[in-house]
Length: 208
Ligand SMILES: Cc1cc2nc3c(=O)[nH]c(=O)nc-3n(C[C@H](O)[C@H](O)[C@H](O)COP(=O)(O)OP(=O)(O)OC[C@H]3O[C@@H](n4cnc5c(N)ncnc54)[C@H](O)[C@@H]3O)c2cc1C
Image (cartoon, rainbow, N blue to C red; front, top):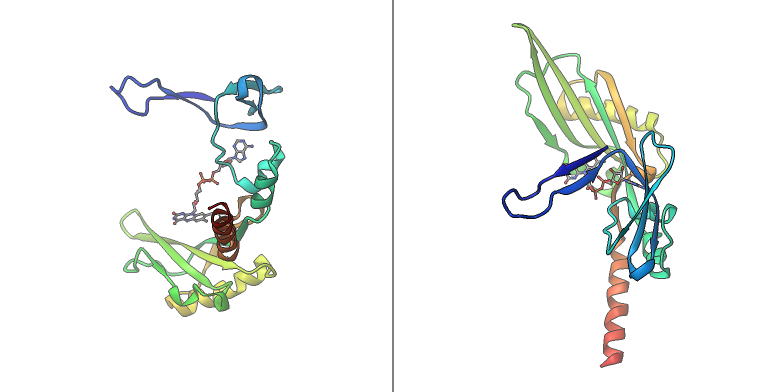
């Protein structure tokens, strides 16, 4: 779907064209005049459309960029080292409403590697239905290690909910495990970043 968005009304700048539900299927660099060719397919459309741009900014997860564009050796080296974090998000309705409960909490004691798989944060939404019926929905967040299953992490969450809030987890309404291509917090390790910084510094000193 194509939309036009005016980012800065009155500035005289052309509106930005935005395409939603459209997948970039191929990016080719070094086309005619040194530009970039982008092929994309709108949802439901059978064929792709190819357009030329001077430059593009890639904002999809970089660890998947190789699926639609040829990477330089440098890009291959760096993108293949991107790490992500498994993040389990559980929406549950507790057996008792939390009329006076806080809107959320961070469990900083669990934000260390030795406490992986335990709840690190909680969001609470209280809803009033009619005069008397108060319902709470709680969202718990857990950072998981590589090995644990969702079922085992859910058992840990049941204990954490009771211990940390005094109220059982209750009925699970929805659960999403952010992993794989949509995993949380893509990053390079600090060791990698430091070694690259040192390598560049050595190169700079050699040149001088
Ligand atoms: C459960 C959870 C809780 C979070 N909580 C917080 C928080 O409290 N505070 C905070 O600051 N951050 C939070 N984050 C992180 C935050 O959501 C991300 O940092 C942010 O969404 C990254 O934005 P982005 O635009 O870089 O990437 P994304 O939001 O990942 O967007 C990338 C987009 O690229 C699209 N895409 C991929 N491939 C293609 C293709 N071939 N063609 C076209 N489109 C493509 C994807 O569909 C996606 O829409 C949370 C993340 C998760 C998962």
